[in-house]
Image: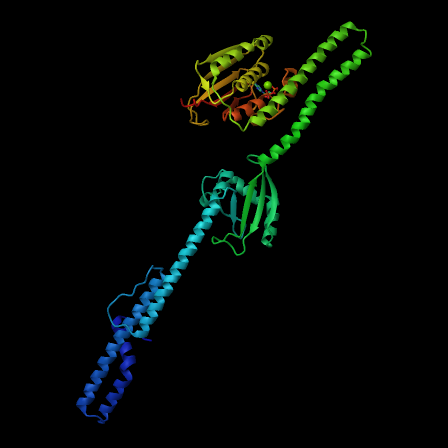
Length: 472
Ligand SMILES: Nc1ncnc2c1ncn2[C@@H]1O[C@H](COP(=O)(O)OP(=O)(O)O)[C@@H](O)[C@H]1O
Ligand SMILES: [Mg+2]
């Protein structure tokens, strides 16, 4: 092969390789006088000229092959042979083969690219949160569901920047570390992980080893499922039965106790009898309320998935409920102020159930509010609020100037039997089910319940309801 150099040098070298030996032989023949000078010189010239022509063609062919190879390597769609110049037959065949090879390599790399994109799109769009880990157990990427779960806005960038505090806590969790070790040995593993901060969460994590590794170097895929809600529902179900029995057992035990006393020691004590009968009536009434609320709650739950029908004039409904509140208002020395915008309508809505919502909220404001305080009730078409749907709606609000509710109680307030102050709630005649009923009714109406309160500064309960009048 000619040494690399400028084209003229290469040409000379190639020509030398091709015609060097015959030219030197001719020169020797001439030198020794074994050929006539003229024919000898002609032959020498012809030899040199042929050597240069062949060298040119040879170098040109090599260059074109080289170009075609480079273009194929660069992944050009069709490394077409430039025309012109003489092409040696075998070189032409090689160039053809090369074009075919380049085409199939290109098709294959296109396919690989498409498959990779499809893989990424599938992972990204899966509804289950997925996190891909590298060989060191660091997060490479998280799909959209995982980013939503961890509240991270960014993609891989956000991950690398540590934008998802929770994910880091998950990856450091000792239970997960064990599962990761097991997965490194090649066995899929699953663990339950409880993350206490910032929000208590219970996750089921499946660790799937990737052998061979993913295209981006991923060695393990974590499939997460958020069990927080399921576990809470399970616990709530179990608690509910226990709570309901407990709530009924207390008044029942008191009634049974007084019956025994009236049959025995207090048989002839008229004064005690009157007092005990009064307490028994109170306790029986408490059991009746509890059973009413339990039945109401289960009735509402069974219809929760079917939306209500009809229109409700909220202003007149609120006026009627406000009027019915007079006895408890008087008992607590409280005042009621109303601001009811006439013609405020909720639809689709159930008047009976919305009456129950109003009653429960008003009674809470009076019972849990300040003795001698002021309760405000307002009903109006809903103003735009980023927390609420942009659709037309109606808003009813009940607020009081009582002791309010500490912030950490707010999320649990609508759970059945959840009370801030158990003793106070019972003595004020509450069942602990009022807000659970409110929540279920609001859910059935596809509405929203907003609770705002600060300890010592009163509480405001707002209910947003859809107001979509049927098209006439
Ligand atoms: N307006 C309010 N002000 C202060 N606390 C309230 C108010 N409304 C409800 N609560 C708290 O929420 C708890 C749950 O309310 P609810 O479900 O209606 O049960 P209850 O039968 O006790 O009224 C109450 O026990 C009380 O602690
Ligand atoms: Mg109540």
